Length: 205
Image 1: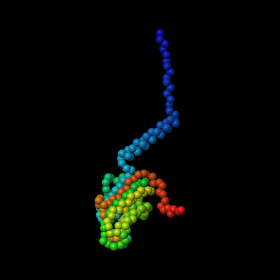
Image 2: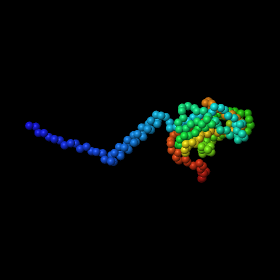
Image 3: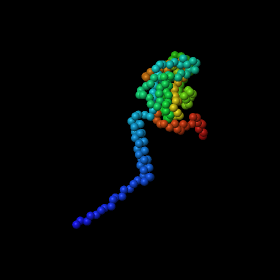
């Protein structure tokens, strides 16, 4: 008669606390990776764009020869993380690193005066004061010319604004419309870190 043999049950190793923590950590990393992939599918982290619905003239600057360019109409896809203010600028609803660009066209003029034209790209605090600003200087004389300035800016908190302004030594028109004007901002990162030095010393021998 065949012998009946009873085999012992196989040992099942139960994961200890360390194994459970490692599993949860890996699961969390997987979920974070999934969220990042979904964010990529949804497009960029933030975006807003505008154009000018009217042309402006330096003559009506009340003596300062400076005009804020009225970028008052949305352009392109629905904004995300920022918005176009009807008074003529972009408002940041999120802090972070943003690439910003302003474009306009200076018309030729017959007026006399300084040959210079300056385009300012300015990040303003909620109260309108300057937080960070760059400028591009050109010597157009009486000729026409396109003005383009682009730069990254660190926006420290929501509510800050992006303005574009122009100065001209001669009275002249600056053209709007989608053919000649744009103001836009594209967000790259949420962290407003490493602002750098505003001014630096001259090099020495």
